[in-house]
Picture 1 (spheres, rainbow, N blue to C red):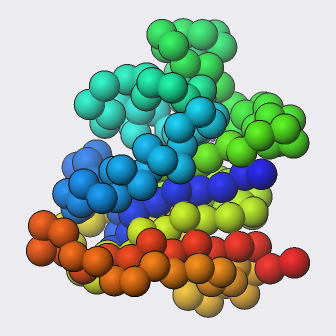
Picture 2 (cartoon, rainbow, N blue to C red):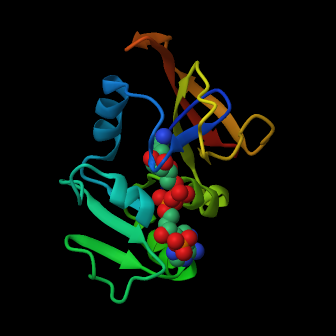
Picture 3 (tube, rainbow, N blue to C red):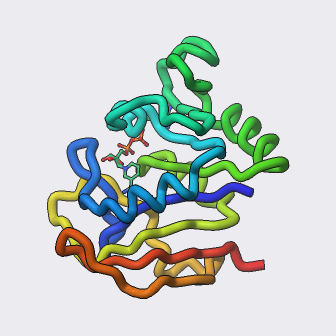
Length: 167
Ligand SMILES: NC(=O)c1ccc[n+]([C@@H]2O[C@H](COP(=O)([O-])OP(=O)(O)OC[C@H]3O[C@@H](n4cnc5c(N)ncnc54)[C@H](OP(=O)(O)O)[C@@H]3O)[C@@H](O)[C@H]2O)c1
């Protein structure tokens, strides 16, 4: 299975200045739970934004146009070509979950391949956002399968949503 995990504002904003928009510890915990022991895929900018890299207890896969070999970032598998990455991800996804972790450019590249999207919806908008997740509001191929109750942390109201690809 290929999934995406993302934390979005109401307008699908996900980041600014190569950082996140919201500090929500419960969402970080959710991210760890959903990705632990799995393969994760990210773009080089998101990789650089990690406080500690690679993320432990996960297979870290990074798309970076300047990657010179498959192991040029310590502890990661690197690709410099999306088609080759997609081929690898599909092979892996046949035997385990592969989670696409961003950022904006990588979420968009994989959009037609998601079986599931874990989307933390924050009831706020940051006008300074520069990175966005694809707008799912008018995408008939994804159906809302699950939604948590609304929670509040650090002054942010949010809920954990799960979208599945329509069969
Ligand atoms: N809210 C969330 O859940 C969440 C999760 C992850 C990230 N984010 C945020 O998203 C933002 C980063 O997103 P982003 O879109 O700027 O960066 P990104 O997707 O993380 O990474 C972009 C990198 O990937 C490379 N790349 C992209 N497509 C490629 C391709 N087809 N072939 C080879 N290399 C390719 C780019 O190369 P080039 O330099 O040549 O373009 C660039 O180095 C940050 O603000 C981050 O905090 C938010």
